[in-house]
Length: 246
Image 1 (tube, rainbow, N blue to C red):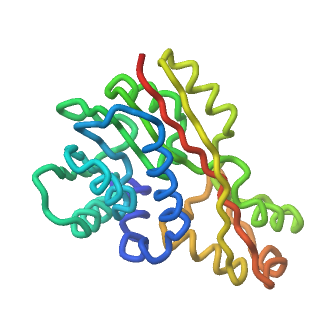
Image 2 (image 1 turned 180 degrees about the vertical axis):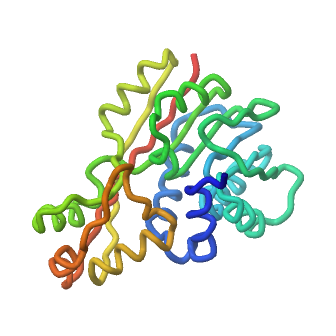
Image 3 (image 1 turned 90 degrees about the horizontal axis):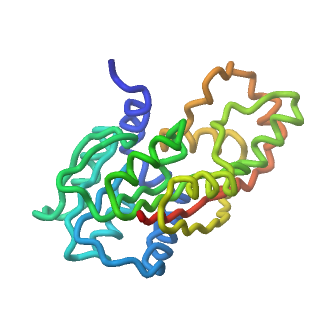
């Protein structure tokens, strides 16, 4: 049976680069933050959830001697990522579920940008990756994101169908239970302006991120959209995490 997440992101792949402006900004900030952590330069990196290659291109440029295993659950995303980069013997591509892959040889680093928020439960995913790499570094969307969209639903007496995102402090405490040598983290807030609520909803669909949370029943969005006709500024609360093995 086809994975619905893979199907949704594959369907959005051809328009992802033009629509995912926040993801592009966040990838650049995450790459720069990770480079400032004083880590030993890796010889092998595995990337989880490459998408169309926003972070991949930065890793290829920054770590020019490293081998990269580039993966995504969505086959079309992997195809477009491969097409966006010059052929190189140090780049290896694969369609893979990011929750529990095993790479041979084991990478020094496993990295991921704006993907881990889709993994629920997250703790076993973190345990798996820390058992197979010296460093696990990831960014993800945090609780508190999309507050204007949520408030418009509340004002209309409705519940937004957005996924539940991790709480920053709780996630840091979770990471600290893994028995690893060091956890470093940082949080940022980015804002994206939309002409109205419908543009925001369409934007989520265009990047493949419109899947509602489990058990959510569709609601009539008209009263929500009426409250957002004059536009809205959508906040993205984003966490950067870097975990080092003992």
